[in-house]
Image 1 (tube, helix red, strand yellow):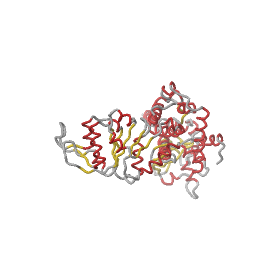
Image 2 (cartoon, rainbow, N blue to C red):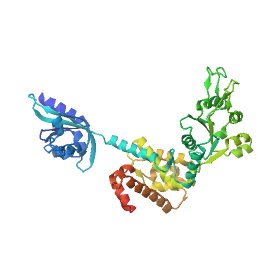
Image 3 (cartoon, rainbow, N blue to C red):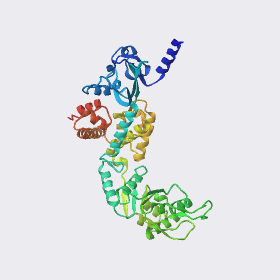
Image 4 (cartoon, rainbow, N blue to C red):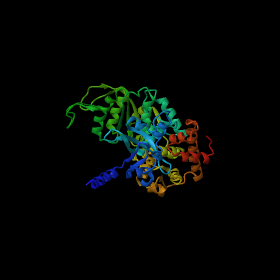
Amino acid sequence: MDEDLNQYWKTVVNTIQDGIMIVTPDGKIVSVNEGLVSMTGYSRDELIGASCTILGCSSCELARGIPECHWCVMFKKGELRKQQCALMRKDGSRVPVVKNASVLKDRDGEIIGAVETMTDISDLVDKEQQLETFRREISREDSFHGIVGRAANMQQVFDFIDGVAQIDSPVIIHGESGTGKELVAKAIHEAGPRRDKPFIKVNCAALNESLLESELFGHVKGAYTGAHKDRMGRFESAGDGDIFLDEIGDLPASTQVKLLRVLEEKVIERVGDHKPIPVQARILTATNRDLPDLIARNLFRQDLYYRINVIPIRIPPLRERREDIPLLASSFFLRMQLKSGKKVQGISREAMDLLLRHPWPGNVRELRSAFEYAFVACKTDMIEPRDLPTELMSEAVVCVPADVAARSLDEIKKERLVQALREANGNQSEAARILGISRTSVWSQMKRYNVGA
């Protein structure tokens, strides 16, 4: 019966994924479970009979360095709870763990040993490092209110945003689909004095004419079938903040007339009512369409165009800011790494070369989608050309020489390495943490780019 009971508890203990270890008062290991064997890389025979110092626990090393401290602080206190530390694996690598421990006593109250449980928190530590890297990424110097760009034409856009954000005149944002027009509108809002006021977005192409007018201006009870109560529109909701009208070129003709009145008189009327309601919101608009061409075809009012086109901003397509592709790729890579939890470590040079060669008709949105696809397709620790969408393989056009593309990427990597080392005061381990790579990779890059700490 005792033998069966012992076998029962042995099975239970070995099923637990956490590491379990029993030691004598002098630190000799007398029992371990499969969880600890797997966690440390040592065999059961190598652990049993050895001193627990074989595991090189960081908290134990610290305790032993305190003068007049018991060789093991756990035996002095009688227990440890939620002690975060690191163990040394057999291969020399470190595994972060949370340790809990209690002394074992016989019937007379004498200490006969201790039992310790260790939970591997590598995934949690990796996530925290990724989060820190991501925080640094979104606050980097080549980012402006979340818009990544170092190219000269994007810097001009950033400078212009800073200027127009301070005034109340209507702003129209021109750009191809996928260039980030909404991000620019949001940046204008955040950079100006209205930043603490509402930012309301309406997609003019997403709703039919009647629903769009109700959405913009609101309605009163009984205005149409289904209008069971009064409803405030987006202009009223925006208050004295900003309202962003995306796809303004798709605005129906009748709604164009009403929007023109808002711009000229600063009042709206709810659908089904004739009572004017004053509004104070600044109007930001965006379009990927050629409005003068629409005017020539009587599809867009010329007087409305003059009212919304007071301050135009053009966002360059990605093919005109090709030097930003590595920066954007890095940003999307980090976002997907954090979101997916996959242990993909980087982008191969061959994959980056394809990204640099592609014409990007879908602009930044297409690049982001490419990384969403790649993280699903990638089965190794590096994104390779085979992991990218097929159109990048079949439609890739040599827009810049390969050596120029590679050199621009190397220059960016070198700049980031130098900046990280400067922030870390030359400490390679800290620089590795800042960059989100291993210390070995930092050393390798320093050697490759001839950078001294």
